[in-house]
Amino acid sequence: MTALPWLWAAFTVLGAAAQTARNATQRELTAVLGTVGATHVRFLFGLPFALLFLAAVTFATGVQLPVPRAEFWPWIVTGAVAQILATALMLAAMNDRSFVVTIAYTKTEPVQTAIFGLLLLGDRLTLALAAAILIASAGVFLMSWKRGLQSGGMRPVLLGIASGGLFGLAAVSFRGAILTLDTSFVPAATFALAVSLAIQTVLLTLYLALRDRAVLGAIFRAWKPSLFAGLMGATASQCWFLAFALTSAANVRTLGLVEVLFAQGVSTILFRQAITAREAVGMACVVFGVGLLLIAI
Image (tube, rainbow, N blue to C red):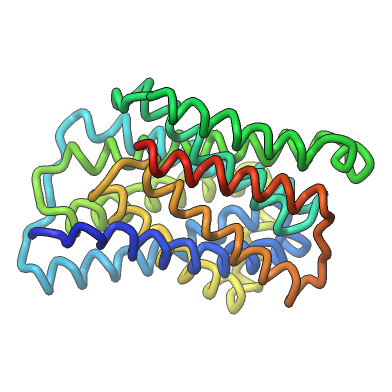
């Protein structure tokens, strides 16, 4: 199956929109389910939709499910675990800071993804790419300094940046897993997504069963918003994985920064949270830095 040159960009923008809806829903669920419970929602309720996507792709294309080689498993397990930790840290940061600014902190992810891509997949690092990393990092520093200390300290800043790094590691790992599959890009991406969500669902279900069974019950009682979060999460991930199958993780995550604009709209309309001039300038630096990153790649 041959993809159009711009198709990865369309998948990326759609994924960013769906991810914004999922993040907003998960943020509301954190107050009821806690950080781990709200994190589990995206996987537990996303898995059935991912399996439906896989069944639909298999039926529509007539392609048999790929048989993963041994190297598939380290990539997919690393990505699955990193994404669990990244989501938990992101939701914890949202408890301390505004929705849109937390998303901006995690959106240092593109520059961190470029570094992981260099180390793990051999993606080149040019001078322009290095400049983009410095500009985006300066933007995050500008957003966090003083204002961060006055409003929850450095904890939400560090949580958000760590979350972005883990999301970057997950993105590179998922692309690495997809590239090991001997099939066309749609079945490969969809199969990798279903496997990763299955791993994540099993891990978090076991964790909650051993540590906090009450949260599992609370998750199912909150099934209506959880179902929507699962649908949006699975849709976003399906789009991301399709994009990862077509281009580098750094390209995808850089363009995915449009989520910052979506998050600003959600923060203003739904949560009625204002953004300061300092934060706005910092966000502009992050956007400019990752935009330069996209041009440099």
